[in-house]
Image (cartoon, rainbow, N blue to C red):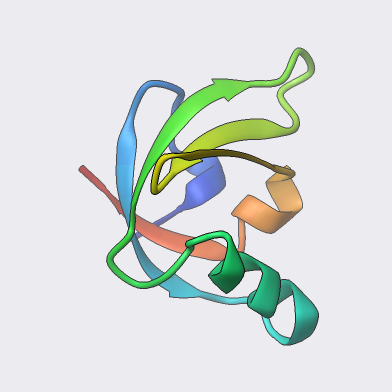
Length: 75
């Protein structure tokens, strides 16, 4: 299992678990980061942060510290 921030641009991953809690966990669930969701890593920012992800058809930017809390399986 990997962390979302380790997946290179252009690749896909499936959400396995979230390591966050509280309001951050609620936000992640609200944007579609639920178990089994397929995510496409679209592109990294100019300095590598934030990264844009396609989550259930919505383009979402996450910082490395947020993406590192999402456990995924590359596909």
